[in-house]
Length: 121
Image 1 (tube, rainbow, N blue to C red):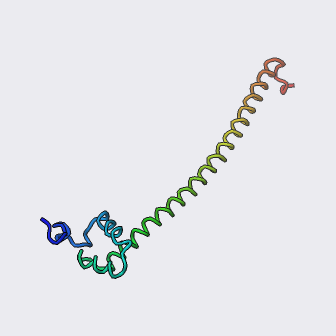
Image 2: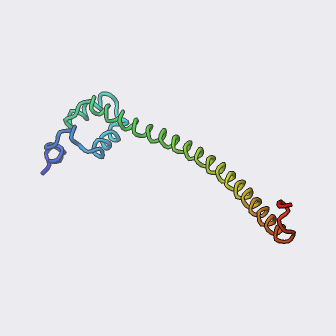
Image 3: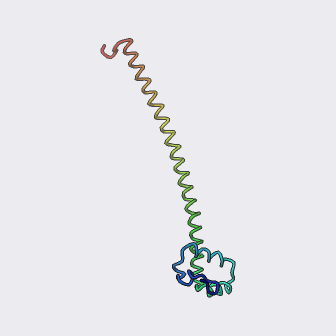
């Protein structure tokens, strides 16, 4: 049931209760309108210009926030990758030192088995 180009949903639900998709559609529809055209659009839809401007600001903030968040996540990722690389180097160094210590221990035991315990004399 439509009256004057407006759907029944638009007549029943106040603009403040519209979902974000509907508000975003209004922002897109009004993006290129002049101030006078925006005022007329708002009158036909039962909106206030301030509402549309607030929705537009919210859309801009949402997009700006996503870019900032993406940049922050990229920086954190780089930091974590550097930490991972440093930890991998440290692990390889410690594994090599452990392998060297194990080899020396084995050689010491073999030497003791061959020549006997030199420390007793």
